[in-house]
Image 1 (cartoon, one colour):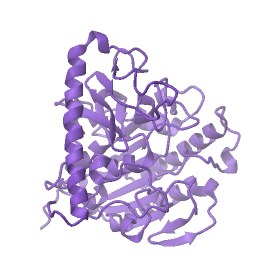
Image 2 (cartoon, one colour):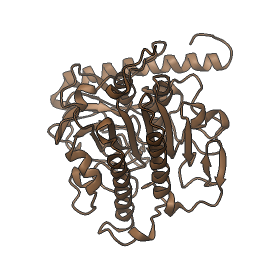
Image 3 (tube, one colour):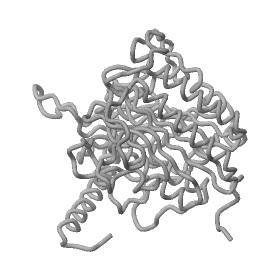
Length: 428
């Protein structure tokens, strides 16, 4: 007899992650130029989390953290990978899809992977029963579409990618419904390539948005999210499905940060704070807006709890269960969040405060870091405009101590990992 809870008590899970979508790019986040009515409906029927963070301001480390529940520095993926890199997601990592599959879920991914492109790094080697998409960003070459572990298209029409990924996700859900796997809930990770540059969009949406080509792309993404929502409704699955929509980091050359400072690459808020909306009828109250401080790596322990899965106990897991937040409550224990560029700790958030200790990129024409550290009160000043370190020495001291302790922990783990790789140690 299975140890898992009955399927009807566990949600199907649909996680939609855009690439480089800005914090302010959705209508429900205050955008008055780009129209996103279908994603807005998820917010209206569920929750908007206004302080959701990515664990990094760039793609690979952000996705590594999302799927492992761990800081990317622990995973050994602190920077963006390219097709020439031989590294990728280590086999040691226990990913969200592996956890859910072990809990009795059917798992599928459609879209951008960006966690390594050698066979041992493929999504199908890390917990996904099905995969189709690009292994890395659409500005890296060659641009090749995979299904499973085989290249199916070497001449990719990027304008069709958003529709193609959505079609594949819908087909997966339909197969699940037809086969009536009531005992086997599903997890769909829909990781869209857009609006990462170069921007491509179907003719149907070209020139439609007041936000130019970028707006066309976002409105296309919104339309196709709506297609998936409609199909869940048609199949009678909406009430049993937790739908989440978010982004991997902030926008790059276009897009809105909603007034936050910085963009992709920066550990200012505009680079790391991301939109996040979710609905689960009957479990998430309608129209909730939360100001709790959470991170995308919290999804692994959260979904483990909802799915009846087990979080590994043989390694540090940085995420925490935020079920109470998603269902309209509060996070019981405040904690610090740390933001890196590669191996350098740039900033730490603790409660309302955020302390910047370093930054990328540095200005070579100015004295290195002469304006640092910087302390911002994010409740009073979310745009990180006014440095308050001079009037709050105790806060600066406390956050500096938190940062130093965590840097030492990560450095120790990195040294141990390098020793293992060199055959000098056998510790896990």
